[in-house]
Length: 88
Image 1: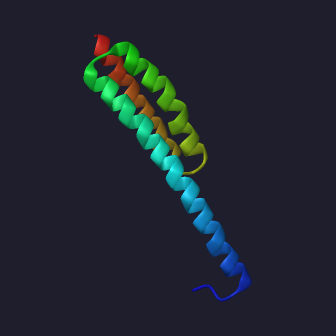
Image 2: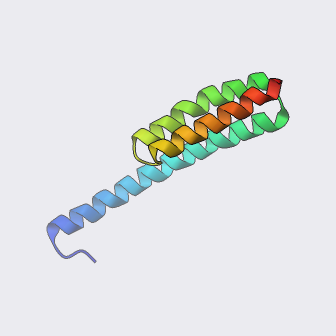
C-alpha cells in the first residue's frame, strides 16, 4: 500500500486511467467485432461502413496510448485489405 501522499495520489490516478483505458479498449474491440461480422457475411457495403467506423476508433486508441501506433496502423491496413478482397 502507498505510504506517502504523492504515492496515494498516483495510485488514485492510475485507477482512474485504468478504468478509462479499459473502456477505450473495449470500445475498439466492439468495433472490430462488428467489422469481423460484416466481413464474414461477405457484404461489401456493410464491411466498408464498419471499417469507416472502426478506423477512427483504432487510431484514437493509439493516440491515447491504449495501443501502440504501429499496432493500430497494422490492424487498419490488414482490415482494409480484407475488406477490399470481398468484392474481388
